[in-house]
Length: 283
Ligand SMILES: [Zn+2]
Image: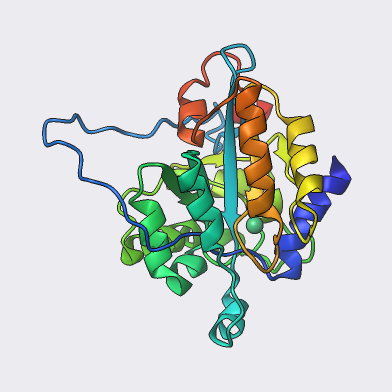
């Protein structure tokens, strides 16, 4: 597991990471005026006031699974994007739409700035939800796969800067969920983010799509790892995760054949009272 985690983080660290996901296909009709306002479910902070950490949903309440896609982009990758390197993956989003697979996209603020049309398209499509993956993919701990570090005093503002970028792109209702770059966090980071009101979302299944060119390898790893309530981490970038879209085309029908229903992270968190896994320090 450690090795796999390192591999995922390597994606982030080495760079190229992910970006984008979305296409120009649009979205949704506004909800009826009579619809009650809905607030995304979040976990309650622990007694110490720390940001809660969510890892997976209930294991015993049906076969649900959440596919999540990290749209990484660092501040320094802007020049590469300007030179033509693609950090997005429109075909992946198109495939998820064609297969009608709900998904949660953990987006960096920089990605939303680079691909505002795609960010808006994803954010306004009810099939998806946009969550926060920091502004420019800096780490929230001092030692996280070589990523540059966000100073403790700027952690909250880094998260808020990403939300501001989403809203500027036209993502009207981003989720109050945050995924730490590289998955790295400690008590200090959890405390610093408490005022931001987010639930930190980790995962229990590593897709292993970072720099993997064989979709069968990714599909097998996901299919072997998924259990009821699982949160699967994958990536949404052609440059750093070239096999992901093909892997999804294999994963989705197989999990459906096994009786799984795809859900967004918010649905798993909403069911979290009974048996979801959260970190002890978050309680
Ligand atoms: Zn990332």
